[in-house]
Image (tube, rainbow, N blue to C red; front, top):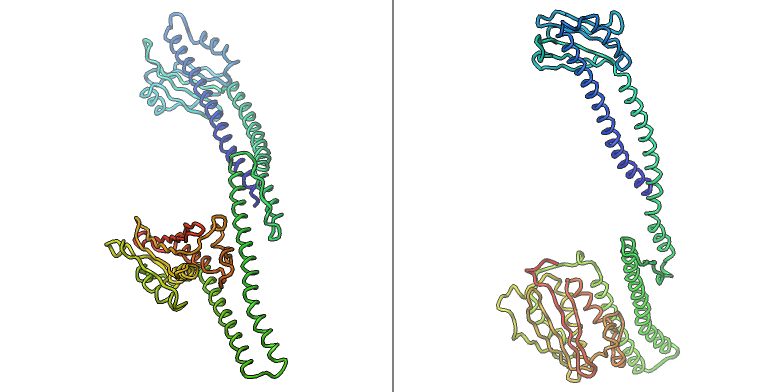
Length: 462
């Protein structure tokens, strides 16, 4: 079922319930009013009859017959019966000969107890009244057909039914038009989104000036499109750069082998070629391993083994890991500000990935610093573990600081140094997987300081 149809049916259902309540209430109160009115009229007539009959010196039965006959225009098929204290009928009048209401002793006794008894017999309304304000208590049974009241009630019933049907039809039409107008912005948004493809991600949805839910939806979709476009741009740059980085050593290897096979050469020439090829293969292998680490760090945390780790123990492995990269590199650990509670150094994470993140940043600091040293400081702030890695390198220009975490991006000052431009991007992804953040504070020509923040294990599990 379409949303427009659902909204129309819902709107019509609400109006249906409202109309039922309103029309039902109107008819109910009109019906109760007719009942109360006829009962009052019959009761008043019973009182009048009893009072007139109690004055036997001035009124007799024949005179009462004439009086009752004069009211036939307002009350049809009227019957009047009067009983004394011994349930003996002392007066009777009927508009139609032989027409009467059967009265039994139980009914009369109940009227004496309650004072009045009201009931209906077909279309006739009946009142049995016990009149005690005269010299002689009398029971008056009076019945009649309220033709005028019932006719008005029937007219009202038809008016209500026609109004109900008309109102329901109007509600369905109004609901259909209202739902169409309400859903029109969604259709426009859907049409604009359909025009956006992977080849045209620059298109955006018009938000308008109204500060409403449609504006919020359009803004949210635009934000999503911005993130998708950024992801596609990063992916395209990553594929282009990775292809270039992989093809360069492969092309070098292929060309060297092709040249070597053109003619017979001396053993020393082959050795020189093999050493060059070996160097290119090592570079290719290193790039492949880095790409594998990058792909692993780009995965979902649910696919990574998570353990309870101590950050200081991971950092203690850095000097040896950095020395394996180059014997000229050195890492200085500054653990003079550690918290006294050991659990404030615990976090949930993957040890190999965190070590890779710290190693990449530290090795960059050693690579670009004249003294080939990186200084690592560890401390705790509230429920966060803070690792600071600083160096004495050339620093990062302000205009390039926002792009250093992009894959394969390298600053202009480091283009002459060997590298792939994946280290910082890999570290950034690893820290994000561990629910942490990484920021950089750098001034060109005055070194850089990377600050990595990780949640303590006492806060929550990754």
